[in-house]
Image (tube, rainbow, N blue to C red; front, side, top):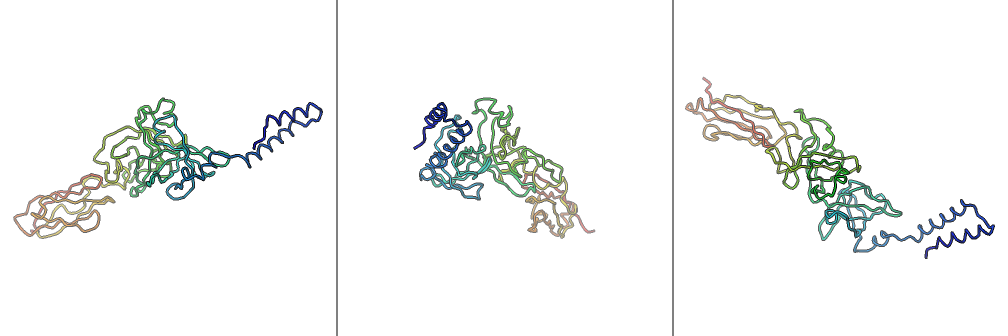
Length: 345
């Protein structure tokens, strides 16, 4: 049973008025000690109750690696989009921070959430707001080869009620959508230009693909909530340079540079009855093609990326014929080389 502090104050005031005085500092210290004892030994929080109840208690995974115990909290949010896609979570102190991914099993399915803001630090626990990540966003590492997957919370900016709230997330008036994701050493390329490709192109990410649709990144904010990155987005059109298979927009802008025009290496003349080697310097996957394949000459693949052979049959009637060798990169970029059939004599 808790102590009646109003009564205690009245009693102390009465003793003081009857010349049994204590100084103010002693009274305050006495009250503080009593209140601290009550908080330490008798305080019961919502966390204390729910962390032990099967209805609320869960095992969650932080950033896909570390397991923690949590309790879910029933809560309603002001915005409809949050009310349907956000939850509140209790944890023991210091278990998560802004921008962490929290994976929770719900109805036998793993659902990934993003910690929306700095957890509220209570007496014996933390409380965090989680946003349900509806989609995954793929970006490339600086080396242009490693695909990094980021779950994102995605929403229509028009659902936000006012400009002031939009300004909190750093998006612009032009943006019509926004996305939240973890801000780390790889996703920072939405904000910082960390370098250029060998072809001299910026490796800053300015376009993304989300669920098969392309968006331009028109605003970003990595500052307001450290650990969380907010993107302002505008719906755009897909281009031939978008890698739909990998789900990466403007794939060519972030990979090891593609070759310049006319850089299919190899002789422009092919003797009848002979074989030439051709190659193109790239780290991309290459699909080779040849006009009149197997009629005038035969295309051969060496099994090594970026290399092929072209063999002409021994027939003098073919002298002067023209072939076109094509190299199509997985970015959709196409390169050609004209090959003329000649004679040794």
